[in-house]
Structures are given as structure tokens and as C-alpha cells.
Length: 389
Ligand code: PMP
Ligand code: GLN
Image (tube, rainbow, N blue to C red; front, side, top):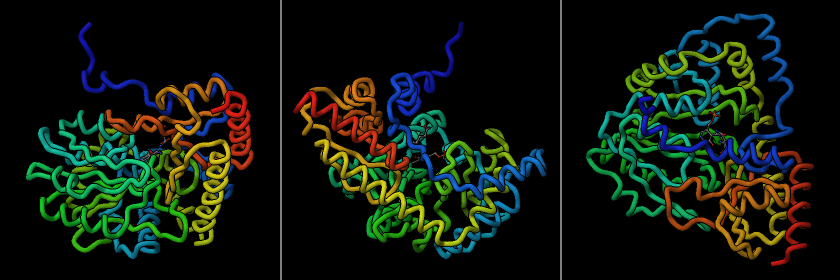
């Protein structure tokens, strides 16, 4: 048999799928894969159920239903003051994952360079490579996740087509500051590059801070493609409804990729998301407040167990250094060990890097019920008390 595509074949099964399967096999509390539990809004789900029965149930426009495109534009005006033409500057996709793929396939020409920050989300590199792009990686590392500005500037060149920026950042929980965004904006202008902005955690920012889209900085409106995900806004990750916002000249080529990837997204889910985006501010504030509480609950619990927990300003995740527990293996071994032996699953942070020595951190998802968080902490406390440091 002739070989399949060599680039995609070279990647294994994603770490999220692998760890969730392992969690299931061992009856572990799954704080690994980033999906929320117990936060799903009943009214948004009821709207989807109504829309399934009432229809329509046929292909909507490939750009998304007018209702959802209008709702996305209204959302971005409400929260960020962006003025968007919903019919020309918003495209609905089947999740942010598809939005990312459409942006990368739509913009990258073989040989183009793409600047990325590690740790990075798992779908970025396979798609960039498949599109013929050359990744230029810059690392931020725990405990502070500070941006090495010189290294970032050095990663740009006249061949840079785009940068991919994730804020708030998975798995670091880093919320990029205004000065860092301004620095990025300067580089994009200097090298005439686009920025694909993965902002799926835009509403999951804590401690009184607010999410700032790079697109709102001076000069950035025409360079940025801003990606959102209803999965994160409504804690309904299985729905896979996302979107891309960009000026028409940038969105055009991205739509060309989207029309051959998924073409469209279920109309009933689009209807429910369009309705949900209009929810009052208290919904959005309440979600962030609830998640901040869960973050604090899990942080305190992991600290009691003996982990050294890194600060998290946004996203669903905390990262924790397990060296104080005296475990003598790397992070992949640690996450497997606690799944099998303690009944708690986490994700090894090294899975978000291409090599290097960040291999003693585990990522825990705190978007879970209080019961699940307490149970996980209790299992870990019991387990590590037994084996000792
Ligand atoms: N980007 C980041 C940083 C993510 O963490 C995720 C997944 N949770 C996605 C994109 C994908 O989002 P979606 O489920 O909407 O495809
Ligand atoms: N984004 C989620 C995470 O980081 C997982 C998404 C997936 O499983 N593909 O855990």
C-alpha cells in the first residue's frame, strides 16, 4: 500500500483523547481534557432543542446564519467596542478548531513563516505544516510565563506571513498584558504580517481583569483574524460552534478554505448560540466569578497535597509543579501514574512544547463541579500521604 500523508501520519493521537481514555479505563476524576462540567446554561440548551424541532434542518449559508453573524457582531460591539459589518466580516465555523484550520489554510503559502508561542495548543503545528508553513517557535515558561521580547522580534522576518497568538493562553493561564500586545502589534506592522488571534477563553479572565483583543489596538483591525468559540462561552464544548472575525479582504480567502472543510455548521445550534450571546452581562460576569472560585478551590487543594501551583489569570487551567511531591519521573509518567494509582487525571505540560526541559508540570482543569474538585483533591491527598515525599 502507498503511504498516507507523511506530515499528518507523523503525529500521534492527541494527548487530550489519550488521557480521557485512560481516565475512563481507571475510573479517574478527569481534570485533564478541558471540558466543563455542571456549568451548561439550561436556557441555551432549551433553545437548541426548540430549534431542532421547529427547524430549519437543512444547510444554512456557508458563512453562518444571519442571526448568529449579527449576534457575534453585537457581542463584539458590547464587550470591545468593535464595529463589524456582520454580513461581510463574520464567518461561523464548526468550532474554533475549524476556524483555526480555515485561517491557516486560507492564508499560508508553502514556504511562509509562522510565528508561534510555546506552550501551544495541539492543533496549530499539524495544520501549519500541512499547509506548507515553516513554524518559528518562541517559548514562554513557568513560573512567570514572561514574554522574551528579543526572541520574539528575532523570530520575525520578511518571510513571516502571520503570527498565531492565544490569549488567555492554554495551558499557561497567561493573560497577555497591554504592553505585550503593543509590542506584538509593532512587530506585525514592521513585518507586514497577519495575526490569527485564538481568543476562545475571552470571557474566562479573572481577578477584575478584562480581555483585550489585539484587534482593538491601533492599526490592528486590518491585520487580525479574531477567533471565538461558543463551546467556551456557554460551557458546551461538544457543540463545536465558533467564528472568525476579520476585514472582508482577509476573511475572503479564509472562507475559501472553510467552504471545503465543513462548509457549514448545524443551524439549530447556531440559533441557540445567537440567542445566548444576547444574555445579560450578569451571565458573563457570573461565569467568570464561578470559575475563579473553582480555580481557587482547586489551587488550595493542590497546595495542601504539596504541589507548587502557578498563578492563572484566565482559561480553564492551572499548572502545578509536582517536584515537591518527590516523584522521580517526567510529567508524562506523573500524569499516567496519578491516573492509574490515585484515580485523578491531568495533562502533562510538555505535550504543549516541542522538546525542552519543561517536564515537571501537570495541567489541571478546574471547570468542573465542586464535588469533582473535592473528590480529586481527596484522592490525591490520600495517595501522597500514603507514599510520602
Ligand atoms: N484553541 C484553544 C486554545 C483551545 O484550548 C481550544 C479547545 N478547547 C480550541 C482552540 C478549540 O475550540 P473548539 O472546541 O471551539 O474547536
Ligand atoms: N482544548 C481542550 C484542552 O486543552 C481540548 C480539546 C480537544 O480535546 N481537542 O484540553
